[in-house]
Each structure stands twice: as structure tokens, then as C-alpha cells.
Amino acid sequence: QVQLVESGGGLVQPGGSLRLSCTASGFPLRYYTLGWFRQAPGKEREPVSCISSTDDSTYYIDSVKGRFTISRDNAKNTVYLQMNSLKPEDTAVYSCAADSLSSLQTMCGSSPYIGASAFWGQGTQVTVPS
Image 1 (cartoon, one colour):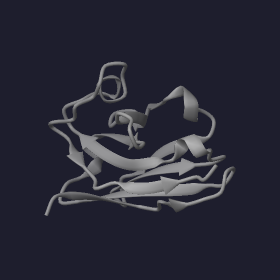
Image 2 (cartoon, rainbow, N blue to C red):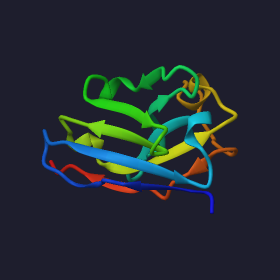
Image 3 (tube, rainbow, N blue to C red):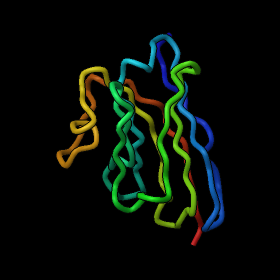
């Protein structure tokens, strides 16, 4: 069965840390551009961070630069998002996506990413109370 499963979300106090994991089954992540997206209540989904399949180059939205780190472990077929110094505005459902047809620029670029060709996880809730 082809699927992505996220884990690691939860409730954390401001300034705390969480590490999200997204593990694939049924296909090898090494050939896919990978991304973490989030959607807060009443807001559109936004890309948080992406990592290339070719050279592991990365992208981060400005609001998480210096706080979040994306990484991939192809041996474990898993992509991670280490989130430090969490803020209330980081509260959202976080989802991972894997796309073999899109580049880093497409997945995390300025234009909205639809992801019709991607595999998506079910999402994991991250809550940082104010």
C-alpha cells in the first residue's frame, strides 16, 4: 500500500521543540521532492519547507528560517521536520508531501502548489498555546 504517515505532533509550550516524521511505504522517497505544509484554521495551506531529491537543497518560508530544519533519511524512507523555538503562530495541521514530478521551486515556490501528482500524508496537529 502506497502511503505517507506523519507522526510527532502535539501540544508544546512556546519556545519548545517538536520533531515531525513522515515515513513512506510502498515507494522510495529518494526519488521524490519532499515538502512539509501547514494549514491553520481559517487560512490557506502554505509550504513550510521543502527538500530536493537531487542535491538535498532546501527551502524555508521566512517565518521559520533559523528555527526549523528539514532532513531526509533515505535508508529509513523518512523525512523529518525539526521545529525549535516554537511560537503560537506555528499552530496548524502539518502535512508532508512527496512529488516525483515537481521541483523544489515548484513545490515551495511563490505560486500555489496544488500537488495533484503528489502523495500526501494525513496530517498531524501541532499546537503552541499563546
